[in-house]
Image 1 (cartoon, helix red, strand yellow):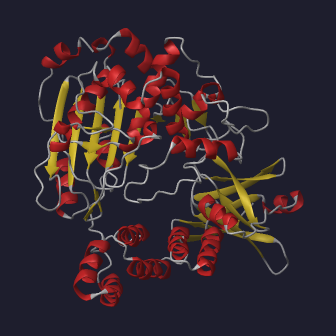
Image 2 (cartoon, one colour; image 1 turned 45 degrees about the vertical axis):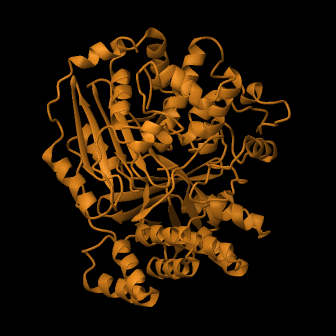
Image 3 (spheres, one colour; image 1 turned 90 degrees about the vertical axis):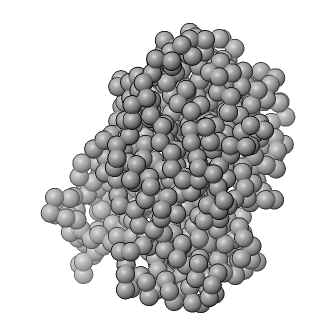
Length: 569
């Protein structure tokens, strides 16, 4: 689910006086149109608030084939923006005295559920609300019968089973790690505490007071009539029905409803005091990590100390929302394609932000060739086009990777396999193509080939927890690497990778740290005696010795680039 909420009686009167001047720049409109024209998105709807002015802009259709023109009343899935609804409900209950942010999660679950602990510390509601619970992104027993609607059959019994049998791998509250599981669990806790469903809570405390009649988990007949069909690439795909973990991403809404929510966040005078106070609590900074360059309110991500932001995505939709309370600006961007639209929202909030010219995905060309002339001709077309006209299309690794999964959803595993093989051949230093290839091999019963590729993926990105977990499930031993303090000390120093770009390596209490010019310091972890990786980004470093055995250089591997650096201090 990737990759907002609230309000009341003064609401209608407040909105009558808002002007309708067009505040969306021509550059943004042309950018949106180019995304639609190049079939990156099927449609995009924007709601932009600038002080007292509200502007909507819509382009595209509810479906690539035979769709209707979209507008601010078209219904989309908003994915993980739902998380801010969840924490607003939490804040309401905290302010009413019904619950406490520091309450342990176990207080609200059946006694038969054993919530994992670590070092005698328990997971609290605040940990769930700030993604610091140490719970993984998704439960390991998540195995949907329908991958096109993956959350529909995940039950609370499965949730309880996972929690009771899971072992935490790091200290609670120590790091930010995005967790759909954790936020879904928080929504479930609110259900148990109140005796009402998550949807009933959303409607009672947020949607009805704000007259957000098109904001629901389950479609009303009116919403169904105005639904934009979700798309994965060029293919129409299923809606996601998220029930047990609904608090993580189950809400559907419209741009007009979401604008109501954003306006309430920006102007406390248009809502009642209970909701205002809950919003204020949800906006407060609740976790900050200089190491991870992350600051969290309750579900909201705080950027540059001023913007509150959250995006979302499901199988066929993407969304982005942000507010700047100081300048009374807000934006929501909705699309019925699983292609990120964050840049549009950022541009409207930060006018200096550059929009990159749109290149059509090479996958669009390849899928047409597959359908017309078969996979072999399509592979040849990919290679010839990349060689002769490399700037005409987007050739990054995600294009083939997305195409491969699209083919899997169509039960074309043999063709998807060739696409994943091509991706590995084209991006031999990238971890994710090997991970995807391994996943498909495992799905096809080729366990040895799956293990081989998972190992390669892990070698290129030792922070790939998915590869580690799958290998362990296949009884493949993954040995932890330890490096002596003396050897760590030999790596310390300053390395020059460019005329004005240096990396400084230091040690502290048997741990190795890396700091690049103008950036925070990050810990790096060993995958071999001279090879280390970062957990905060997909990057790795290797220390090199001269013929006398002295460390004289390092190599940084990141984003497909190989950057050597000489030791200068």
